[in-house]
Image (cartoon, rainbow, N blue to C red; front, side, top):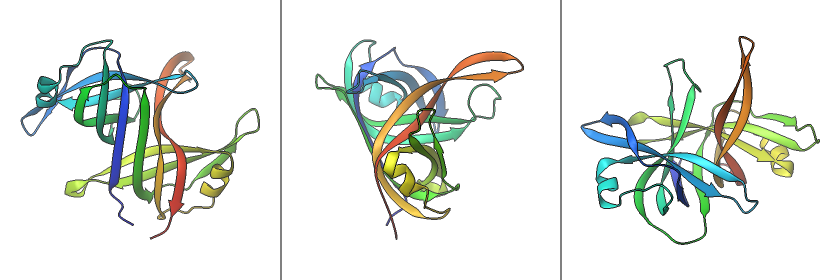
Length: 200
């Protein structure tokens, strides 16, 4: 089982226009929010990174709908401001869309932390996983994943170093954090696991 599979697709509404993010290997990259509605009506607000050339071919305007394919990426934030692990959607293809919103991904990687099984206040089982997905040039993306119910119990039996293949969606979740006596609202990004299989 290859440990570098990272495929994702989104259909959603631009929540704002692109703004400059960074330059890498003489390519300028821009960041914009994409709002993807779930069947429940909840909206995931996801951060999309796209190269200048892609945005020149398909300009992104706030309020318009787009279809994107690409992969989920992570990087360590060493600025001391905001979350330590930043999760984004890296767009490789971008085009206008008028279809229903969609959010799907497929990942194959290696567990790099022991699974943590816990219960919600309402008694539902939940399991937290951290998946390392290989990228080219010796790099890896570290992606927090979450599984529910009977799937959470199965995930709790996995061990560090196990290779897993999963499908799911990229989601956002708001939470409150107290630091130095002050409460702030933050947003976490994670993979909600729908199916999972392990093995070589």
